[in-house]
Image 1 (cartoon, rainbow, N blue to C red):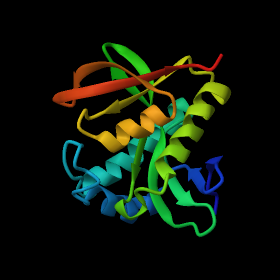
Image 2: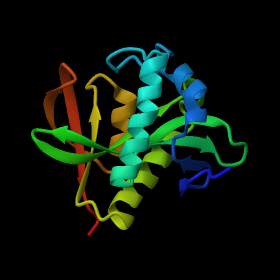
Image 3: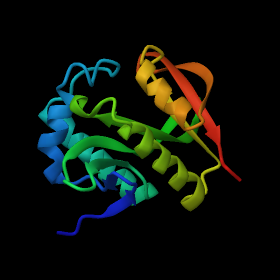
Image 4: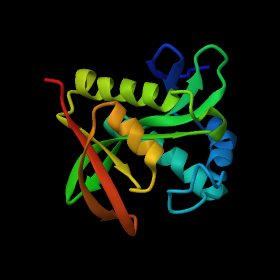
Length: 171
C-alpha cells in the first residue's frame, strides 16, 4: 500500500496525503462549520490542488499537512501538520489543524498539534513554530495555547486579520 506514516500518538496516525484522500478532504472542505474561518469552501479542483500542494511541501520541505486517522479504526479525522508560511517576508513553519466536525471536542486537535510541535522542534530542529488563526476562531486559539503557543501579533493575510501565535524551540 505504501502509506507513509509520519507521526503516531496514542490515538492518532498522521500520514502523508495521497490522491485517495480526495473524497474525505472534499467533504471536509465543504462543511460550512469546518470552513467558517477560512476564505471559503473548496471545490473539486481546489481540493486536488490542495493535495498536490501538500505533496510538493512533503517533497521539498519534508513536512506538509498530513491526514489524521484514528489509529485503531483508520477512520478519517481530518488533517494536521506543518507547512511553510510567509509572515512579513519570512518563511515560518506553521502548525495547521482542521478536523471533521463529528470529531470536535475529543482532544484530537490538541493531541495531533502537540505531536507536530514535538516533531518540528525535536526531529526537524525548527527554532520557532507558529499557528495562524482567525482571531474569532476561539477553538483553534485554545489548541494553540494548550500546546504552549503565545499570541504574538495580528497581521493581514488572506485579505483579513490573522492572529499569529508562536512558540520558540524547547532547546
